[in-house]
Image (cartoon, rainbow, N blue to C red; front, top):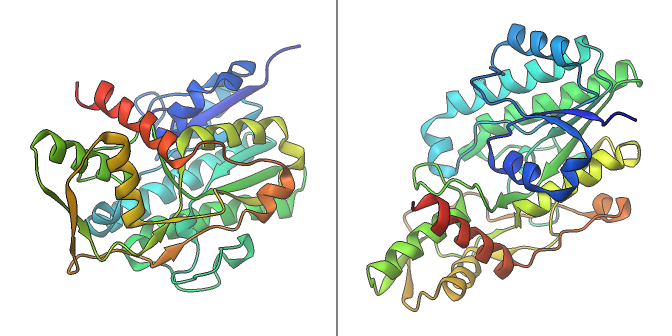
Length: 310
């Protein structure tokens, strides 16, 4: 029996590389072309690639990603590039007759300023967070396109996983592009090396965030491939609990051995006060994250020391 052939977009990104490192991925014949091999922003290129390689399933993990600063600085790029990539891969897969597709969305798709866990049916039920609206809009459109394709012809099962915030190995640590946890690791490492007595935190540090280790997200994707028929059409992947910004700084300081103190810059933007996804569907489906915060930060810091600083 031949292996299931999977086309993975975004194989050089954080989620893609963690997926390729997952031991369970060896069960499949995985195509993970670099952007130099497959330009996802070109529909013709995507259509030709699918016609040539005929995958059984597509996992769409590619995207232009970044933190608050990057999203605020480049809203056009975050909207257009993610919209083009999502539309092209999903529609070309449908045209090529690929029956199964797993699209990775983002918790940015949810309305802003909800203190309760965000449920899948809340997508498009309120105003988006302005600091990353362009990225969110592109992700919403791609998820809706998947839904519409399945609605028109149920033999095409195009499903969306909505991960909470992720961090981990292969993350972006450059401050111009990094998310919260890799930015914290970079700042604390520099402070520790420079014997700095204090490290600055944006805002008062009380905003809450849910960050899951990317290796766990890879595990969820492998589980989704293996149990695709039981996977709901749209499902959150997350921890089901969150931490304050201050707690992330404190956990990283403990892991990294930074013994200085923290000061707060109340003039800086912090985004949403809270963004926690509901994991009810995920729990009913039978999957949960395994990595503790300290363990995830430790693995990420080890990668930072070994790969980013070399």
